[in-house]
Amino acid sequence: MDAYKPILQSLKSTDIEEFIGISRYISSTRGIGGIIKSKPEDFMIWEVLSTGEDSRMVFESDLFSKSGYGEELLCVMKKVKLDSIRAVSILARTLKIKSEEIGLCGIKDKMSISWQYVTIPANALNHLRVLRINELIEVKPFRFSPHKLSSRSLWKNVFQITIRNPSNNSIQLIDETLRELRARGVPNYYGHQRFGITRPINPIVGKLIMEGRLEEAVSAFLSDYSNLENKDNREVRRMLKETWDLRWALDSMPRSLVYELKMIESLLREPRDYVKCLRTLPLRLRRLIIESVASKIFNKALSKIIDEGRFDELEVGDIVLPIDANGRFRRRRPIIVTNRNIKQVERMVKDKKMVIALPVPGYLSPIPKSSKGEKLLEAMKEEDVDFEDFKVKHLPEVSSKGSLRPISIPFWSFSIKSVDEQSITIELSLPPSSYATIFLREIMKPENPLTYIGRLSAD
Image (cartoon, rainbow, N blue to C red; front, side, top):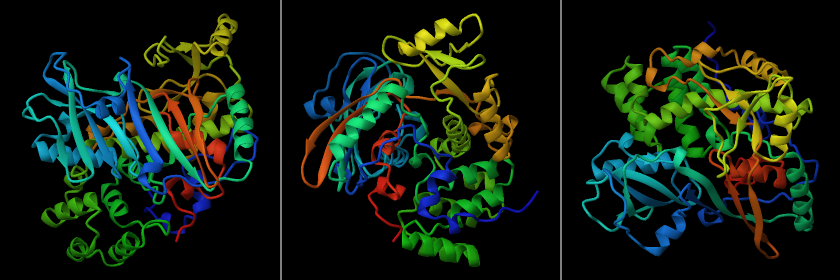
């Protein structure tokens, strides 16, 4: 097996999307350009549960309902400029519980203001009405619940996003793009943030872990640097790669690199125990790293499907998922398209009662016996990944059975809230696990994807 050779150092901003498997648009319109996430308030997110409870409204109403029962306390966590995994770790440490005891519906962007539901053990807050952890996290209890929160509880995410410096005729361009998206659908790519937009290290580390190359995985996570990332981070990674002086790195690494610092401390205690080192990462992050390998393969396969003009074409052998009355995909009830049912399924897809799906690879993934399945297998081969590789021998807790993911986003809403000479503010709602940046990508079509994180260049 060839030794791993760092590749991020040569990555240009124009290479990012190709690297994470996104290479096609479904709409043919010219984009409006612009930039998002210049500041956290430009990207606000809140959740709506399947019960209709709106997290932002609940938080701002300051109501604590004593209704419900159970050993879990449903709360709303407001966070500013902090990703969900890090926020949960901070909350768990403050409450003196394990991160795994906290339930949540999904992971929200770092450069944002978000209101997301979490569940915590009912006795953990000790009847506090509000828990404030510095200026970044605020947690308000809402009601008791018998169940720990999961993605199955979520109906939709709502986004209020400000696009700054769009083109002059942006409203007309948006209208034209929306018409195409309504007619053809929106590709349900995994978004840039799942991989790391300035340093897409997750699929690299994930593949090394799956291959059992744990020392290389640790080295890549700590020292592979990208010229697109923060200068201070880049320089300390570069020096660490050249010297592998862990004690120097522990003193020199920016304090914001919390995960890297914990890994280095683990290596200094037990230099050859790479399993223990990787397990200093939160379980949700370890799983995300492995899942990013599958996500990249899904993206590449979807790009190939769009390229061949099969995105909105139903074929015998395809897998479809029923959609319930609440617009949720019933992943546990997949249907195989056959010669006998294809006409009926076509009607159901057209009426948005079913949606075409593609496997997100895992060790139990079914393969569509259609051209879409062939494109998935092509992407697997290009990434040199086998389904059995998702049984992770050294870290079995991150093994992945795989799942089914719709290739399009059948339910969404979009409205323009305000317009001025320098910005457009929009409101967008999407089903769980769909990405606002992927929707905006069709509208903005920027030359540089760094504009999705508030930057115009790599400098």
